[in-house]
Image 1: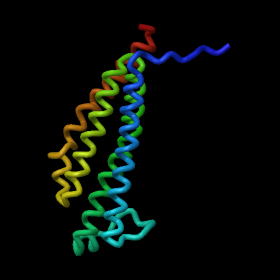
Image 2: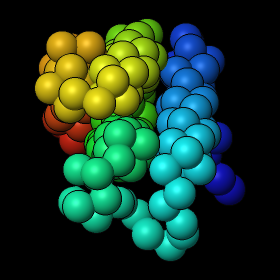
Image 3: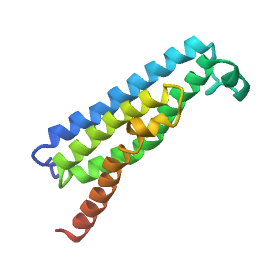
Image 4: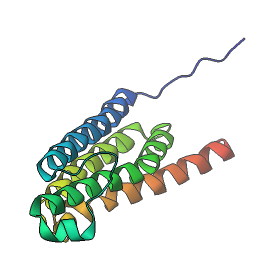
Amino acid sequence: MSTPIVLPAGFAYVGAALVSTVWLITWQAITVSGYRKKSGIEYPRLYAEKAEAQASQAAHLFNCAQRAHQNTLEHMPLILTTTLVTAVKYPLLAAAACAFWSFTRVLYTVGYTTGDPAKRNTRGGILGEIPLFGLILGSTYTAYQLVLGA
């Protein structure tokens, strides 16, 4: 006989926060696609070459948008794992941190696509590390509690 999985109260918020990451990545992909079209950088190339980016503002902006999207994808395993583990004991904290991280990634992308990559940090990049760090700590503490049976 199987044991049912019981989700803690408030877990619906975790689902909503996780869906925000899907919308984030979708919006970033659409953004990259628009910059790709404007720049004329064809598939399967991931980035414009250095000379292309130096010669064309459109190619430079494509690289910025592509890098913002790629960086978000690089963070996704951390965000998804730490959100789900933290949510086992602290669903509202996990949901708030995940949703706030998604919001900061929008700011990060908007800053990056100004064409000045330094603006990615002043517009959300560094701010986004706060919820990520909170989720890392929260998931570590939750795993510790689960292992000890607390």
